[in-house]
Image 1: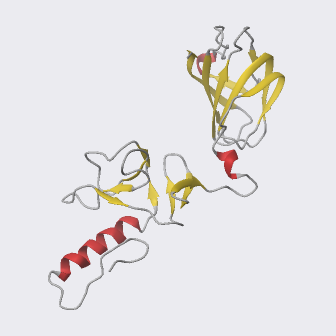
Image 2 (image 1 turned 135 degrees about the horizontal axis):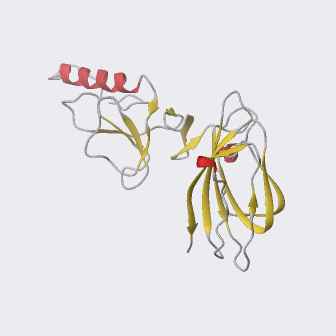
Length: 219
């Protein structure tokens, strides 16, 4: 017999080595009392630091949580149950396990899909206002465009901008963006090229930090 949420073995009458069953249960309880994970990881790692937990994103162990309760233990796997909630430390958001997958928990006043991003490029032209509650924007240039950003944006947003397939257009950024080394982003000129930009909201200031991550991707 096992417990419902953590699938821990229960002791039975006349069982040998009950102390092992008891200690294993304590180790799992201790590991999951603080329901947080560092982040996602592609596959089960060969080693972890004691107390670290990651959600596996690919392969046969997809969606399971890997952890190492004590140094003398090998890396263990926990299979989540429906309704389990964890906090992702590096990305600062909550996840809930539902319908056999991890989903972000929407904040008050937002829609769940706004926190993730887009599944297709959005055509922009002339003037375009970026949603402050969307973490990922995928934009396609249809003409020279002046970008704006709503107030009270997320602490960090990513923007993928794709150049026109048959022309070369420019982007104008808001004046309150402080660019790294004072070099504003200028859109790559190659047709169909893509640039990746990140914006960071500064506390106690209307300014944002702008960072050019990479430019001139193509496929």
